[in-house]
Length: 227
Image 1 (cartoon, helix red, strand yellow):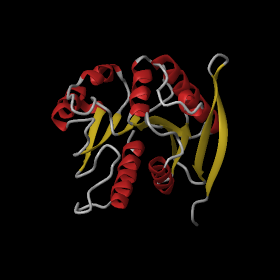
Image 2: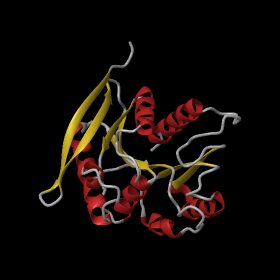
Image 3: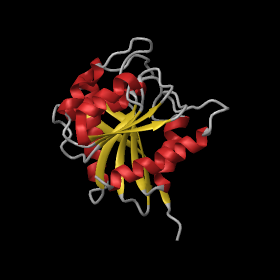
């Protein structure tokens, strides 16, 4: 029997001072776990990339809870300060645990959203989660290769999956690979040949964009069921 996918729009209250934000739950009838899925800095929870990943993960029996950060909710372009982002992620994780208490709970996100999630985890603020998935970790600004943004990762206690393209201008593999090695057994690096930071691949690449999305979905499923 085919799985039924329930899509539900929600509101998540962050705090009295911050207010609430929009959220979107995709819940397969046969879900085995749930991923709190934060958006990147430049696009909110409703964008083509996150929609594709959420649908693909649903096919892999993975529920997702997407949400907007407050700045995106208000239509602003500049991301919120770290405390606001962390508070929003905490609220989303708590919401997911209440909505689906029977499911294993994971968190992560695209670029900025993933980095803010790991920042919260590094400060011990997400004790409910079993692991973190990075859909392109933004290790550095384009053309400014370094590993400064990785320092907090060494304080994260849960397993981490890094999904990275070989053409990602925000994560030189020459800098990222040593970070992964230093993190040891709690970190796994999955490289997608030809993909950029948005997981787009050139027309002459061996993999097509649709292949990349499917490949990532399968890899995320394998990571989640093993943790």
